[in-house]
Structures are given as structure tokens and as C-alpha cells.
Length: 120
Image (tube, rainbow, N blue to C red; front, side, top):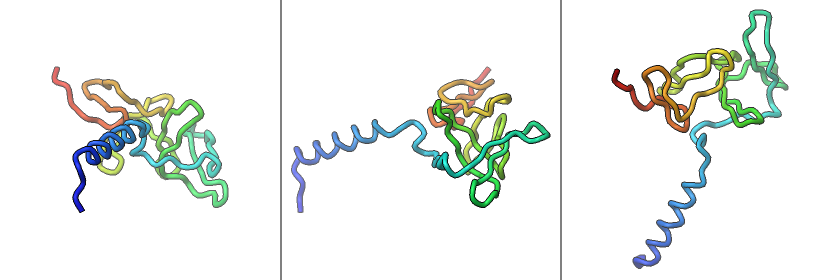
């Protein structure tokens, strides 16, 4: 079956407009907010465990202000961290993922991934 130019152009236009509607953090699978508990322990670490099992969470969490955090074995990440082969930067105090900015000499994209090392 052969597709005409108009049909192909329409398909392309729909695909491009749909991909533009994808949220910036589409590459991060966010854990459902009703399934975990966040607490601060005696060591002042922010921890995250699953409600039902009590096991530590490893994954992305999004708060009500759409800030992203990452928990590794139940503990909130801070500073630079390599996750699934990509480098991300988390604020040292809040743990919020940095996006669309430069951290020291490194640029991060809208998903928070390090994309470029800037020269001095």
C-alpha cells in the first residue's frame, strides 16, 4: 500500500505536534505518590519506603510542585549521580533535580541529564 504525499505530511504533522506535547520529564518513570512514605531519619537523611512492604524505594519521585528527586535504596540523592548511564545533578540541600541550567562547568538539559562540559 502506497501513502500519498498529503497523507504522509499529515502523519508527520500529527507526530511532531504529539511529541511536542510530551512533558519534559518523559524519560523518567515517576513512582506513584500513593505508594510511598518520605521521612527524615536520625542521620538527617531523607528516606523513602513503600507503604505496603516497608522496603526502600529506588526511583524518581515528583512532588506537588513538579520537582523531581531520585531515591537510591531508600535514600535521597544529592550532588552528581550516575543513573542508568547518565549523569544528573541534585541540589546538595534540597535534593531537587537541576534542569535547563549550568552546574559548575556542566550543562544539563530539560530532563536533568548532563549534556555538555563547558570549557573555561
